[in-house]
Length: 463
Ligand code: ARG
Image (tube, rainbow, N blue to C red; front, side):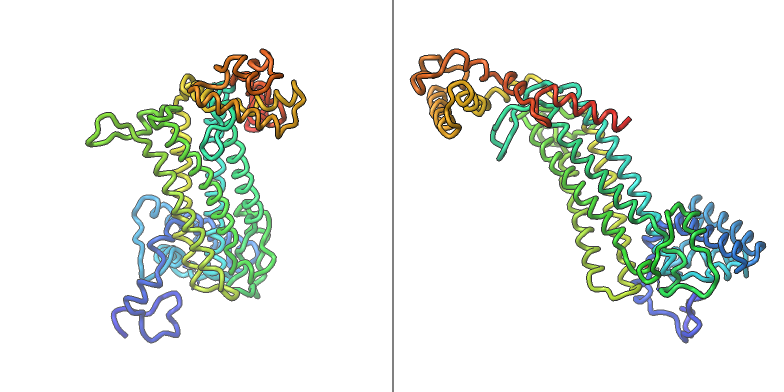
């Protein structure tokens, strides 16, 4: 036997301890220490259940409970010495418990395996992240709604292909993201409902011969019910995949909005001014104010997408039940969750602090022939032209305005009638951007009344 002695937890059949490289590839304590609170909560629930079912004595359960409280406070005080030789958080906690309370610690692992233990700990951790994501998203929605409310009737260009398409309202554009983030919340909430079943008691894979009460542990840990199949309980990580998938979609929404903020804050657009608190300067160009937070949100999203692909790849070929591959689930999810929470908080701060520049928005809205569709619609409505012909006539008027270097409302009536004789003075009433947005009263349309109705609906929903 070398100085690397047998592992105290599983070394019974081993004559020698692991090679240093084996220890390095095998250990997860470097990252799964983040699960300490969940691990200890799971052990509390398990020990209480073992005592309630008479599997261990009340006095052993009491000793375990006291000991676990000590371990928890040691970890929280930064006094706990994590050991790589003890591989992971589960064995680190149990080994320390043994040092503190002695023999009863050895009874805690009755009717339990690290396989159901880690599945339980990780579900609890991911569940907390789901809740945090929903809180972060709701805060972001509130910040967006405040912006939308302030400028519910401000006119701005609506884009397709990033070319001016039709005027829209600032409130309408901002509320589009409130809808997206609302669906993200829905996805997290759906995932939460599905993941809220308890794996504890599945033991290694087949269940246990001890008369455990899985209902009791499930309830103690805030789960809706125990998982119904022990093999499934220890071997699936679909809850983590769902969290990552919901995060990835949310991340894409964040990234698109971040891209808009980068464009909008540029000198060419000046649609918004980001606050100093969420901008940075350049060390060489004194005039610069850069939207770094938006850029970093746009970029960091890659980590979330990467984590999603990585965990799908880890899981895709694994036979039932547990395989050590699954230890690779954690770092990806930890990093994705950290990234998401940071991105949500940064986005919320940026939105809360930013100022939309009404004058610039409205000036831009009026350029680029943005009311051409209104003109075509008027030709259909007032003159009874087929839409295709109205489209053609309008196209000729746009070409004329372009040649003259003016916008559509600047064309004189004789110039208008030179293209189509039936056009009357009334046409000018539809050419203003305000008239244009005001006319779009269809449900979900950009008219300020419609936007305000959606804001009111969301306000009520968010309470
Ligand atoms: N650290 C392990 C993990 O994260 C715990 C489960 C170990 N189970 C086992 N059968 N070796 O997956």
